[in-house]
Image: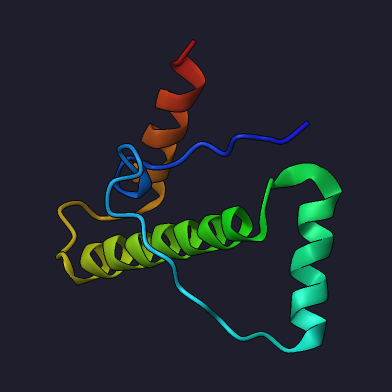
Length: 95
């Protein structure tokens, strides 16, 4: 049974409006790999598999941007032992 991956909001398509065709060239080994992944039942077509890879790359790129933005933000509190103890206590207190 084909799985339906959960997509982040920015990667979801509304209908098929704007869908276009793109031809790509793959070495035989990569084409065989894609065809094997499709045949394993997780994807209906090679296009579906490639769209999923692109969506995952979009997610990775978005996460990297968020991490870099966070790294550039000055710290608001000191991440010392007390800080992590408070975090742990909060997690342990959660249902």
